[in-house]
View 1 (cartoon, rainbow, N blue to C red):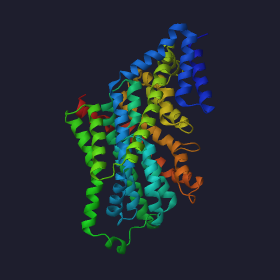
View 2: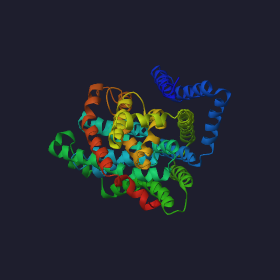
View 3: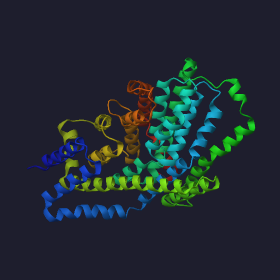
Length: 441
């Protein structure tokens, strides 16, 4: 039996297990361990142990629970609500201003949490009811929240980029810095689309009436501004210490977690319930990601041992005669297809052992490719029929928003995201400029 056939059998077995509804880490880890035992006997049992030790010794992994804790603390304590009130008051006078403010809220939530689920939950529960009450078009605002929440996996501290850095053996700090400019670019494209469309069709996003604006004094507006700026100060204080070299990556995440807790304490919102809910959710999400990383390391070790990566490289380059950019395009298309029924972490774990070494062998920058992968995941999140964000929105949206409305809402935003992906692909310095400035070429 050839190693290529064994690799294909492993991949097929894993996909079958995932389609039966098994947990991602269970399906991937089970296939990896069974394959190792069948191939190398008792010695194969050491692969899971070695992967566990590698995981436990990976120092940057400590950032994961810290940043997740920070995001949940700001969310559970209601400080995120203050942000939306700030955007609501300051952006309301513009046509589409509340939708633009929602994108701003999503950027900040992304910078506090690193997960798209958190942005979706806050947007659907806080922003969506207010936008509908203000007469905004339900299809447009549904798309706004889905697109804005997808920024959570691109804007640092992105948990997805932490996982990619672990699997691709790349610096998490460089990956986070590489995600800053593309993340802001994507948010700016969303804002530009909303502003232009609401300018052409004012009924889609009516501005606040003069009477409503007069109800809020300038003093109250600046009070809301100071309240809403608190999470921003936490984020810039945390990242500023890191960029100045005062703290390393893990220490910065600890600064963020402590600062968020102090902010909740100062605003008298740090109750036992908030602390309990924050800790419980942090533990659940952190353990889930650690199991996934462990399974990915085991699966990747078996694939490396089989030489599957070299076989796939030979198939694309020698057998099919494809060039590096053609192969890269096929990889991105495969992510879009898989994104219709898998989430970002599952896609990364399944194909990273194949794609990441191949990307390096083709001469592409792995930090830049991490950003391309993440943007492609954003698009896949919103692609019918089974995009991850589509079902999250369906579960959280009010009854008047149907699944048809949700599918229709994402079309223009997916096109905008494809434009953003094309720009980052054609001009790699959009992603690489900031890490090069900080870390050097």
